[in-house]
Amino acid sequence: MNNQGSNVKKFLHANGHVVLERVDNNYNLRSFTQKEIEDITGGYRIVLGEGGFGKVYKGKLDNHRPVAVKIYKNGTKKEEFAKEVIVHSQINHKNVVRLFGCCTEVNALTIVMEFVCNGNLYNILHCCSSNGNGSIPFPLDKRLDIAIESAEALSCMHSMYSPILHVSTTC
Ligand SMILES: Nc1ncnc2c1ncn2[C@@H]1O[C@H](COP(=O)(O)OP(=O)(O)OP(=O)(O)O)[C@@H](O)[C@H]1O
Image (cartoon, rainbow, N blue to C red; front, top):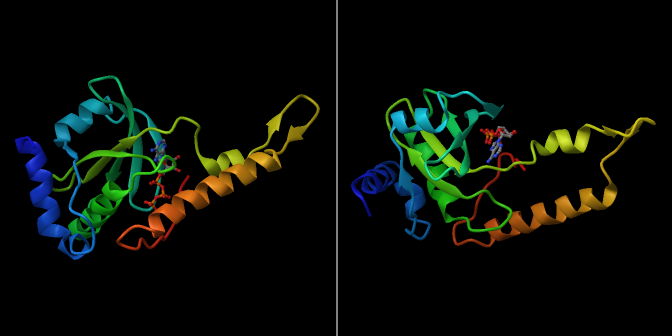
């Protein structure tokens, strides 16, 4: 583990001990500085969306891999952030975005994760496409596929050593 990686480890140990007592301690996350996050997002140019904890930006790693970068609001508790990072880092499932790393600098708490290219599920389910003869609702068989795949991901998370509680599920 490089020096930066050990910074993340120290941060998670200091702030996430309640969760760490309940999960395997096997996270392998890259550590980013605030400056690197600025570079990855090209100066926070493209906003993908916004959730309860902060804004999500599109970014690109140095190997050109596209990523989603979630910047937590100032005032987010370090313990809350550490808990999310530790739990997310434990999940290894094809239907859950992979966590690549995080920034633990003061007032710059950020996670860097796999980018999902098909947009927001809410829009897919609630916005109809059009074929010129009126709007076409998203097909039922595809809705069922999404429901099944989501349930598989939730089931995997529930089967983990540390039970995961969901406040919201974003797909
Ligand atoms: N990995 C990703 N790839 C592409 N877009 C994403 C990704 N993660 C989030 N987004 C976009 O950003 C929006 C907000 O994401 P976020 O995770 O903050 O939502 P949330 O689950 O409502 O938030 P919170 O957990 O903070 O309440 C999503 O609705 C989606 O449009």
